[in-house]
Length: 285
Image (cartoon, rainbow, N blue to C red; front, side, top):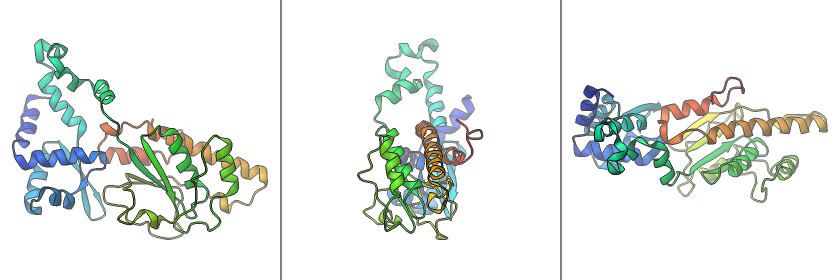
């Protein structure tokens, strides 16, 4: 980072409200916060908040993305790290490791190993919540290694529950199927529902219905996959389809769990999750 850019960034932070604003966005993580929520948390008028948001945005310390009529703001982690590194890198004649713990500001591996990782809630949606979304829930809960909590729901959940052949496949592959059931997405929209960080739709359209509002900071994506309930092939053909669906979801979720969540802002993170809808050759690792 150049001296001029660093001076502009530090100058933008030379005000109490802006420091509180940036700390609030850092606490919110890559999902960010809506402008209205920031104003309510800090107790400042919207016009005053807009002034401070603009100053931090011009300094490159935060960025906004539009979701519907709302602007969602997120801290720019890479920019903040570069700003801190600007101070630290010259320490002790260019050897920051000799300056006590200051060098840890430049050591992302040491920092991440000493911090408790965030736990993200992920909701998978499909129309009947009987196959694709059930698979997504089971796979992510297994490979997420405690960093992800997966849920599933549907716009018109099957009264018969998940497809028996899907449960058989998952059980054969070592998944715990005891808690898997078909349920309405309404279960995740009430005040007592867990806050979702990601909502991933696994079909092109959810029975023609408009997806509920899961919150302004939720990152949404669509990974359209064929519906096994609509497939009328032979038993071997159905088994092949389920195996292909499972493999496609496992691949995508394996990449998803490896994303550098702490280093990406909300806009970049949504772009990376959206990319996973592409065929294997097109998805960026």
